[in-house]
Image (cartoon, rainbow, N blue to C red; front, side):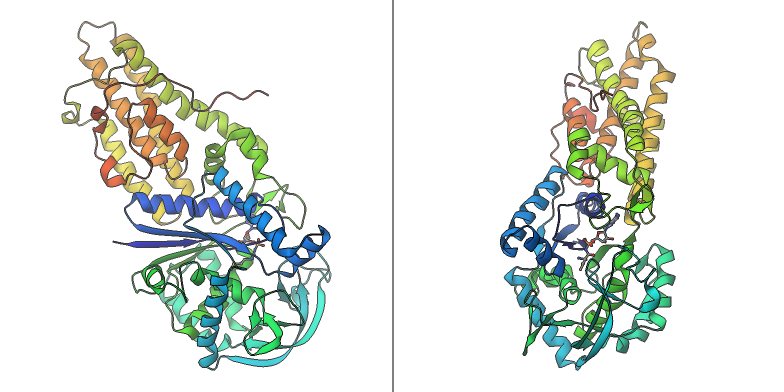
Length: 509
Ligand code: MSP
């Protein structure tokens, strides 16, 4: 069986989730659901990065003990993920003991290899990024991302020799065209690799963070240990069986989703750490753009935050899951706008999909007493069937490439065709004919089309998918592999449709 391991970055634990963090985590959830439906053995990891200096600052500002602060925050993050039907296999927190054990084990490998050394570090540091900047990276002496003052730091630190792996990383990127996606990011990384510098992996004088082995004065630099969450999350240092299943195999499919601001760490430092430790590299690092609101990055630090909970209260989970991946091509920057969200809700969801389902179910009720037509309609190779079979291929190919927008367009191609088909066939006229066979055939084909649309929609809109199936009188459980649901004609296994209920109720203004 193929395995599929998908990770999100672990989010800094200092505030509630915002729409930027929701975005990547939803993407991972959609991929995990899709691969499960394809029959893969999937592991989906997300979680919190709890050792940043900012966590301590915020906990202090709130007058809370850091661990209590983190525990409360973790509950809140998990609650929001549940709200949006995000179902990770593990929610990792870097203050967990497991993670510390894994970090020490991983570090030992690098140390034994002779890739760790001590030196003096000087540089401009942004606490929000938890990263050092070169003088010429700064914009008006401030952090280019957060536009906040940076701190001058000079201290004795431990370093990891990533430079040693520079040539191998370049070679790997060149030999594996899919390693960094989208393509445009690849050149960015190849150019940063030209003058890659070793970065420090410890911080002196801090009491927050994982103790540095053999030196009480130091803690691990938060980024260095945070990257290792991708290992501790699947049992490295504890349950190597799981680790060996999802990572440490030639054919292990590992996809890591990261934002464009943290690509350096994932496409240079992380591969260097993996090479030093003698591990496989992930199959792909997929870089997403930023969601902006009024062209500014949405983030806790810039203060222009859209609260996912507000969106949930207004729309529920599925419309948000749909909108983010239909509106903005994944991998590019995109502007979030409440207006566009409303338009897509009304047009794509309520009008196109909602009405299609509603009309077909209502006509089946009205014209056929709610009974799914019987008879072997599969023999008449209908045009809809051919369309659906083509759509399966296109949809799979798009999702394998992490092209969410195109996969959704493929589904909506079927939705649009369904609506046209109703207008062309005019069931309300067919019902007046003596021979009702045509009506039965038209409605059967439409019911089957909708059943197919429900299954294709499942990774994006699990609740809607279930609701459509329920209206069709089908009790397929969520997560039933495509292999079992895709063959044309399975609508005949259902006897009756249920009462039609609007999937996307009209919103008050
Ligand atoms: N803790 C580190 C990651 C460590 S992974 C080993 C971190 N955390 S973060 O909370 O600042 O950012 C996490 C992710 O959220 C990043 O991929 C970042 O790009 C993403 N986003 C934060 N704001 C965003 C938007 N406005 N839009 C899209 N994603 C953005 O970095």
